[in-house]
Length: 300
Image (cartoon, rainbow, N blue to C red; front, side, top):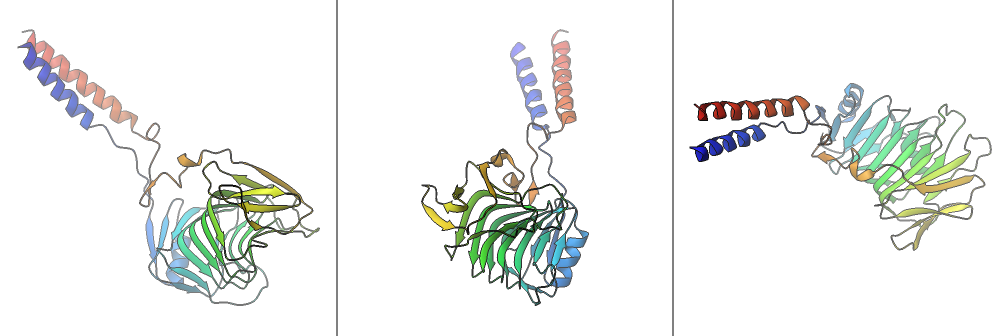
């Protein structure tokens, strides 16, 4: 009799465990762009966490700015091509233009800009993962008072690779920051990183941060910086600068960041904080009630 009771109790516990809620998955919206109109519309309509997928190469006739939101643009191997000319004003293909603005680029090429490929401006941030920046007349990346994080970046045919500066138009207190969190390759060896020397800009210092798991590192070497491989062999160099260079280890734990905690295009909550507390409580009550009922029947 007791063995039957324990078997039933065990079955109820197993059933209760199976009802535990799985981690919450965000409700990020996925949008598709196949031309300039659908791309700019998708960016304008996007909210934090949304993903825009390119279905083909897109030529744009004007620069695109992202403000006040965090979005991902997945190129799926396609390109955004600058189809405009001129160097007056902002001519960057994609710009994150203020604090709280984040552009995450994945598996995409940005090319043929008359100035820059992508820009982190005035507190904005760009994250570059499987990104190629090619044939941009000034630099592939402009960090202008913002932050750029390199996970996997290839630089081809640009005048310089990554330009770091802080112009007079910057209103935030952010120092221009470059985070190395992976791999950087370039077809050039000199001026892969360009440290702006303009005495009239607001740059007090350049901040370079290396994560623990980065494949390439950026290190200070006198009045310039160098990019090294995992064995500290110098691969690329910057120009010389008179400004302060701060090179430090990145304080955040990148293996636990949103960029690395993804399944497909859906963000997954930390299982220790994202699970439903109500689900656990309900499960516990069901299990206890089941055992109590069986115990009562067994004692009759």
